[in-house]
Image (cartoon, rainbow, N blue to C red; front, side, top):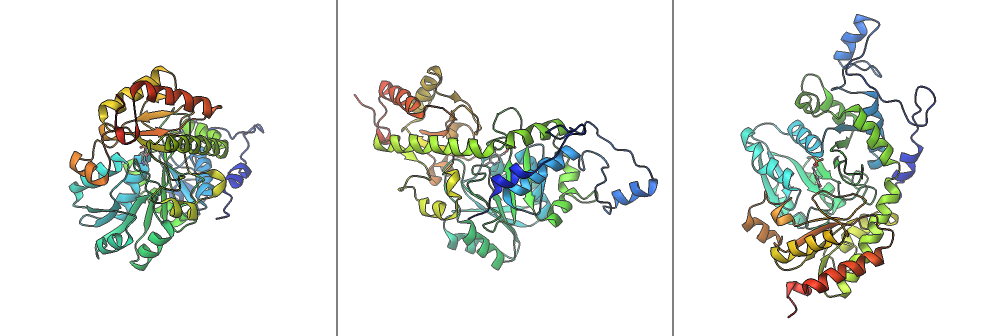
Length: 406
Ligand SMILES: *Cc1c(COP(=O)(O)O)cnc(C)c1O
């Protein structure tokens, strides 16, 4: 892959109205028209460059949307008030009552609950499959299937979807491949690899400062405009619009995304290697023994690394909780959900972010209760962090496969 998203984001320039190096923030919900005719045409969707009402679009949201389109190399992108706002708009735009979705069985808990529970209201059903098993993906597609949905790197098991292969498969059934690329911005260029629609939670790495929630949909101009349609656009009508002030602050944070992603990946790879040498049960796509390491290596942009997420299985929920509390007391990170912060964040997905998934299903997926998900921070001296984490593990007697030293 030689798509240089980071350079394109750096090259995007918008000056403020007084020549400021950042664009002015559009602090208005509504916009005046010089003629009634232009207002009518704008409602009809025939007027380029005219703003109508900020739920439809605003200059600040368009700037951030353009940066997101450069990130994925898509024609267009829309921004939303949250990742779930983006995901729900895409799904409801593509599906009618009675339709069917084929989805990876390891996905973000909120997406799982939306597909499994909420969409029952509309009789939209989902078959959850092992996304790394292309035969079962293909067998799950029926004439009613409207999309294949997956995460490029899945939450929390860090399975890697083979995007080119899934793209080929969904194209042969003439349905779109929708990829949530929240875990791997810049590292994986999902649209370049064949995804038709790429969704992001900007809340995580892209904003990177854990101070807001936001989302985006990167796709063709036709699809992005359909989401904004005043008559039947799910984005427009469900109303999960991002505030302009937030859009402006996320755009500024995106300017440093390439540096942050490299550092998150470098630190995570260092810790994963060390934990593995210590005989711990660590999962990280950058380790040669990760089951999807080859798929990840073949489709990633190598300079950005294997991502900031890793998991450690310490055997039991009690041990996971004790270790996380101790690491927090030692200031090694925070016991918190979410990811992409400058500080390491850890949580036990079985009892938090994936608790929407029933216990039996969690077990079937291989999501054990002793699993800790780490979003590795931007620590300047990761060796020092490693030594301190190891100290915590020694203190609690954590060994490989959760055995406890006596
Ligand atoms: C957090 C997350 C979401 C949801 O995003 P919000 O901004 O919290 O609505 C969706 N997908 C993945 C992979 C996530 O990590």
